[in-house]
Length: 306
Image (cartoon, rainbow, N blue to C red; front, side, top):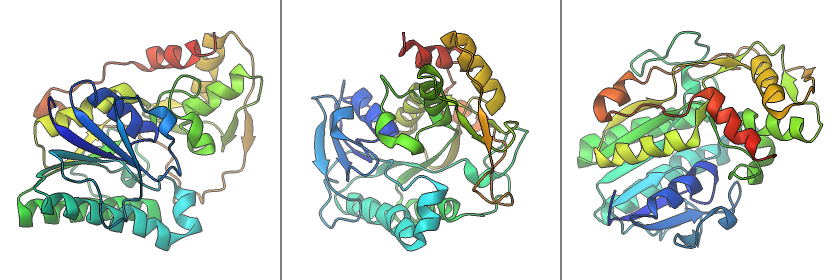
């Protein structure tokens, strides 16, 4: 990506703003956001900000590439209003891609999710069978199917990126505006640094493949550079428990703050207990490898509180 005009939807949000700011070093970047989970304060001055919804009729899609990051991105948001979840995540996706297609754009990279793999203590490959258990998962799988349609019917490059637990941090990162929807590393670090007990739903044994946003941004850019089509995992291939996360955060911050354990409000039969990526497909397609190890990522998050 160099010398291109690029649209990032959800561009003032956490992942979107990191991507937009990165791409703006070498490209003309437009960030579209409705400011529900994002804020223009996350963006560098070199990024053009447009306040609007992916459901709008006249989107700034006269671009060389679209990075579609905008989404209602949690279980709760979809269960509270399944119709709104489908409108934003599915209709908004189709609306954005179709306007881009009509404007001559042939390259789209979009956010999917690793949640559709369910509980996995082994690495999850993209070709494994998946089952939808929540409205959020249904909306992201629907995106993948509509992307397949645009690729097959209109010969567009449509790369769906299944993210694994993306994080950065509250203080110097772009997660603060997300509040309770921020990644657990950001939430727990902020709690512990400020003397609050981090709240764990369940017994703390659940695990995540925590992936730093800088690695995600590199993966998104590479997907566009290589004009990929299909779905690809972006994750480290390692998993750590919530209890271990709290322990490592305490060590790094020089604190001794215990977590509190609460009943999980998400039903056990749909809650994703463990995740871990198999990123072989992405590595073979582009050479992408995660560069920020868990320990280094935690250090970066905690250094914000020095």
